[in-house]
Length: 535
Image (cartoon, rainbow, N blue to C red; front, side, top):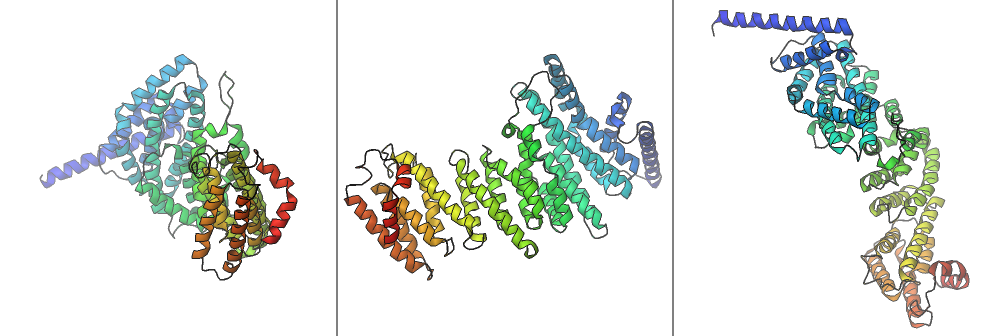
């Protein structure tokens, strides 16, 4: 193309960009920044505007273009707020069918199919406009994420089981909106989380991004490198600022909000069950995964007021992934601490440890995942002070639970060896955990553990005793702990002798007529005293 031709094309391009900018300014001046999509004329113009920019290649970065494109994405490309409002305000069958037709039509529309290209143009424009316009658009995006969380949560509770196909189609829009937010957040992170911006910016932006990601976590269906890059960047920034940590943790829904549910504009009275609220559960799971990365600097009052109630509530969640995340949170909390508040933090840890054992064991084996509980117990005995009453309580509670589980199994005269991976497996896992604690608990707690473990083992049937003794033999033989090994060798020899005596005597388990182990535990105190003396 000749120089004259290039000059002509360049002039036409500049003229077109100026015309588009003029239209954008007109729309903004007429409707304001936050109400651009509430007018039918604006709606049509924004769709045309977004498609024009998507197909124009690189355009000059000007604030009106960025603001209008942001509005087009939030109201026309991903019109979820408008759809939720219509569904929730008019939940009767005819209206729902009309909304479903509208959703399907939108999913098949050209603007929605061009969402990826439009998002790319949007992010490119963001990087080059002035700081004030950047802030305006950021706030629009973060507020949008909150609205989508609230709207989809209510819609899911209202329509789940009744209009599942409609929900799936709406989630297609929401999943694309999530991708748009991820790419935008990555652009914000690259631009604003550097040294030239103030501490306030470094505090506010990462928190807003994390809260927004938590709101859209339900729609995260694929692994995105951009998502992980953004998370790493903002979490690293939050970890450096205690006020940012507090702000993020306190943004988590409160215990009251979690258990009471949202108000639904529906003529039908619905019973709210917190663990069936999938949108809320996904959001809390995000917090359960992120908070442990900065729990070291979470103040005591925030741990007590905000973190602990939510953590313990979700230990009882029937979804194993959520329950395991709650146990991981407890392990991280127990292993955290700073010298400046060590005494107060240790006091809180000990208080939480008592309730942790109650909460975990009450749900075991039906709800509590064994691996999660085992990691919590290991953290508890490792990080609490030596001789802590909470560790003694932990050992005592585990032995009591093993006793209860074993008595339920053996009262049915089930062979422990034959059914070790069936009904007896929960009992075996608790026994394995107790055996593992022999090498983990401190020397002050070890005698108490040995005593209670011996009381439990001698009451097992012969095959159960042999399994435990074989495991103990192996564990003691492999131990290189010169402090506790002599005591363990002597204790194990005595325990073996007692088990042999019990097997040869008239009071073996099989010879007893359905003796209840739990009552034996509490009533046969004289024989236990003799047993303790010999051990």
